[in-house]
Length: 153
Length: 169
Image (cartoon, rainbow over all chains, first blue to last red; front, side):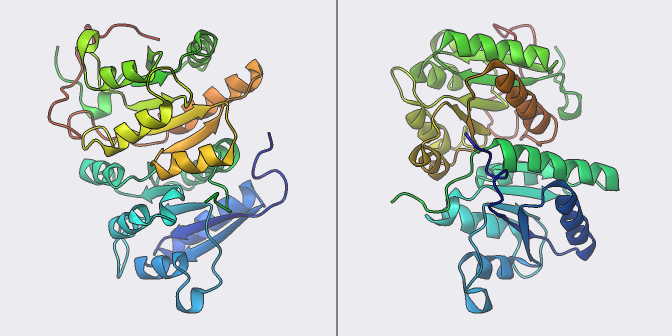
């Protein structure tokens, strides 16, 4: 049928990332790749959960179609955010991609056990980072079928 | 044979659970054309897939797959049931499981994500589109994504003896 990204309907992506440099890089890479993406940013785990559960100033936060989650975050760790998402009946269907500099086996295994949808390690080189963002776009935002926003009951 | 360190893994073990011989052939050829370093194992129904994953019966030598490509509509045990089984099993749940189905029914998509499918991919009917899709799966899942090591996820899975596995893609 149609690709979700092809018809001008914005795709909501939530980036949970505390490094301002990485936020900036991700924003720019997505902007160059796919103009239908609306990237929201949470800079710590508590803010991410507030956005996902529409608490406080985040009452109007859109439900993300895809979450990009760093593991090492202030206030609430990325592993804890992941566990909360995947234990919540409503949130668990949102594909959650771990995007971290860690290549530790324990982090990879733990993330999959907590039902991360996939685990990507963040490259340090700019070109490689841009390529990775493109490949996230190519797979998750054009090829994969994301759960519909209005879930059937 | 010496254990293969994680970094030196020569190829990825892919389990395709698919009952249509035509789709199996297409997938096999597409992976071959994409020049992937994969070994494709095929089970043609859900019961056989579960036997493969638990190394039962004729599958006693089966490797632990790095990724599972699972059709939804399968004989004997349905793909949804296979998915639920995988994601409720402490040892198997960490294996990335991609749904690869002709269904674009939103209920199937949502249900699969509820059961913790790692992703949902609609299978195109045209060969060209199918090739593009397999290339994309290869580029993303087999080149970018980090997988759990075969040994760490479960004590019972040894590193595979490369000579012992049955069929290679």
